[in-house]
Length: 239
Length: 239
DNA sequence: ATATTGAATTATGAATTCATTATACATGTC
DNA sequence: GACATGTATAATGAATTCATAATTCAATAT
Image (cartoon, rainbow over all chains, first blue to last red; front, side, top):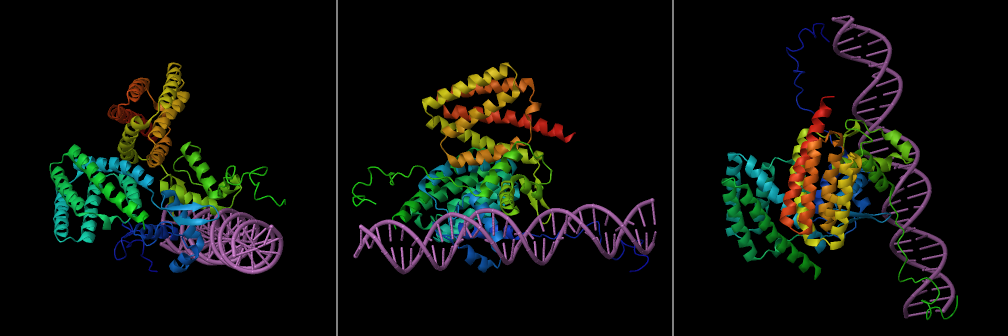
């Protein structure tokens, strides 16, 4: 090392006062948690299915410890049920669960709309309108899958505009549980049309920054969604 | 065994079709989870404090595995923060956290009131009125501690009357985090009086089963509570 | 042939062990 | 004397091991 290092430290070497960016280090269980949650929510593992501890360990190349830690957290979130000495199962969604979850989601979604109107920027509104146009195109083309993804993005953005992480995290947690139900296929044309109309009213309320109106629309929009999910659930019961 | 056992099975032996009551067996981590949560919420461990894994293991007489499983869940709930290789700390409640949590709690509490009015039985109303009388007595006697406990019971009962476990669990989770703040001592007399008045209006709305009114009262009641908690937090910051 | 009991197998819950990382302290250099 | 570097200690994350409970399957009795 050169003898004049301290005197010239700030000259050539990296600026130690602005430490690049902290290396993000994650623990295994945290990584697993995210992946498993994604798998369940995306339907890679269907409700009622046992969670094969051993297989998953092999698949992810980890030992049982972090996997089981992740499972405990998922159980706490309600995505899996954990029976002592009998391991983990993917939690199924009963009709009662749905009937409980939806009013709560309604309240949260309404709040999200209200707060979004109070905090959203013009740029964000523009971006949402843009997504809305995209979504309408998917509707015209009857591309259910893409419609759904864009739809979800819009709701995500409204949630983000509410600027409330507590709200976001609670809502996402509930939303994730619903998504398991795979209700997409069951959406009738009339419901779809209705949903699109509601979305148009949403955009209008958002532009006017009319929180109360947006809250109301979101609430009824969710009721519509509830019917779709309920149909799908009852249909799957009969298989 | 007697030869006529199958024919007379229900006679003398235990009735196998109604198996008494299932033995409730809990896992260690589940037990720990509950205890730790209680300890944190009750303030036995103050925010910022490190969680001494080793010591707790000794205290509860368990190994680190179930303890750490419980800590992961608590971290997910937001009660502790878990930094890789640096262990667990009791999560502190910043002012921002509070400002985020309260609107959400408001929405949930309002929903709770609405649903309670739709589902509550006369017996439950009677019980709540009884608790209310008790609480008023504690108010007159200026017994803050007892007042608070009875108060909490009343809110618990309303939540129960809403008949929605999803709602209950979300609300309790938020409520628990707030309770860390130890805002009790800071309640001014005027606020206390105000709170009592609000409670009287609550009871009236509940008896009339006026969901909208109760929702509104609960919401503003919570806003009042928010101010108290905020004061306490700011006061503790200055120490 | 069917049902029930008991042994073998499998898998889970918990403890222990191992390796890695952070913290505390001491020594050396400027 | 202050700061940095190196070393020792302690604690954490993850793997492995161990014990116990559940499931499976075969054998026996009805």
